[in-house]
Image (tube, rainbow, N blue to C red; front, side):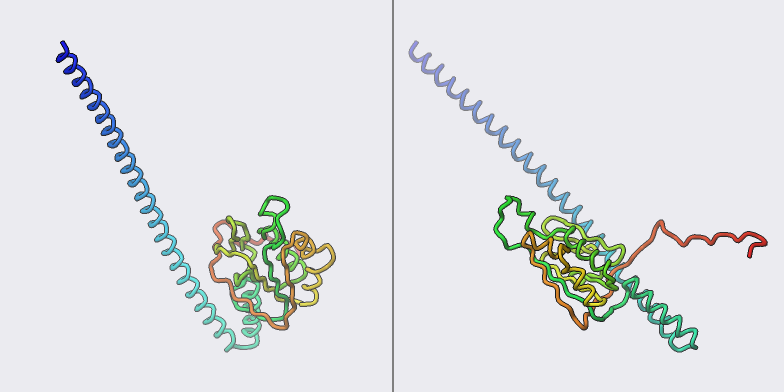
Length: 251
């Protein structure tokens, strides 16, 4: 009886060990499968991101080639206009004005430089965002400059057009599709005294930003250089309106 009991206990122990080993093997196999699935998903995501990156790079190269071609054609037309009569000269001057308005040429002239830096004050509100420069702050400065008659504006070297976006993307600001972090440097060409006064007037935009400790330095300059817009503007919906038909017999 004693031998049988020992054998039964031994067999029971073997069964328990087999069950434990089987459970561990099943768990290990499941872990391997999950890891393999995760690795496959990561590899697929990386492949997709790489394809998107390659596609965007190709589009960027194509747009740059298009810009270079259009600028070459525009330069050719400008040279033709300059070599003609007085009417062609007037046309050339009009083209130059349109280029400045559209932002497709480098411009220089007097104006102001505005440098904005995040606040260095001690955080007393508990919200770090209160002491950082946001897109709304930059838009306030830009709108004030435009209202004061600025004829050309750039932000961190990006020419600002009517279609340019200024928006927060995390801790940085996106301008013309490119990301920039503080400090933010704004160039504005126009009457330097008027632009300076518009920004630094009492309770103006500089006053408001200073209340949060945001550093805003405004200086006048006799000569600033603002680069042309480095990109393309495509219109898919807006088109030239057809002229209204004139009534018969009308004067």
